[in-house]
Length: 328
Image 1 (cartoon, rainbow, N blue to C red):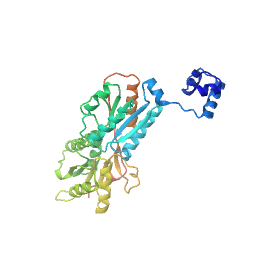
Image 2: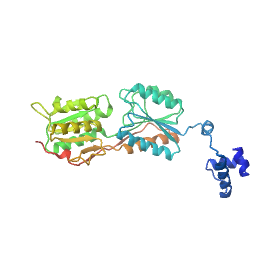
Image 3: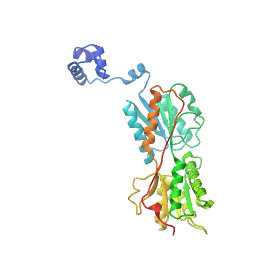
Image 4: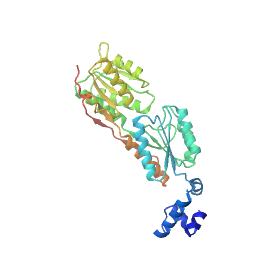
């Protein structure tokens, strides 16, 4: 900065004001300082600036899998809000492993991020974050609520969305509806199963145990569960798939079986309107969830000290044809 000040013929404070975008500098002086900065290749030392301000202008995001389209959309929204607040976003995938989640979150804390946005891994106990929260690291949970910690949370209306999707299949004349979901210890999977059961109960319809299959979203597991639901003395005539990975596996298996079955998936897919018939889905708003979580986070960083808030965003039914297939 001394070199820049000497070359531009100004004081150190003027250089500081120009670098930090502060007022009080004429346009001619600012141009001279910028020319000196360009000529000398000056770069602001953010590490020193961070030490002085006590903030790192960075946020950590821990999610299940950045490769999943749902989480990539969510991540982009968090990044955009962070950018508007002058912060960088660091992202890591927990791979649904509580130990990995804890390692990532604490690694971000060790690098003194200002705040954390976390998609909890199934079964994770979040009391490990209590000392970090007390130390001033703002924390918001998204998609699933935390365990053992009271904190701001952003969720989707999972049960209500699944209830609406199931009721739509019932209105098409289906009485034997199968539910293929993720592992039951995952909050979203359990809530969507609850919504499915509530819709069936409200319609006075029984749920055969062979129609419900919860577990890993691997193609083999989903394919076997689908085949079981579509065979036997009372085969299902419609499918409700609990998330996008289950839906993709189910569509592929149905193609190989050459079966015409009504199908609704929870989560929209990029190619959903290109199938024939188009894929009917209950769509979440991952970008909206990401924005809401980031806004809660920066409100905390901005001085909000009120009680933890819980935001629930609605899911909406998008009708494209697959869920409107009548019973055979």
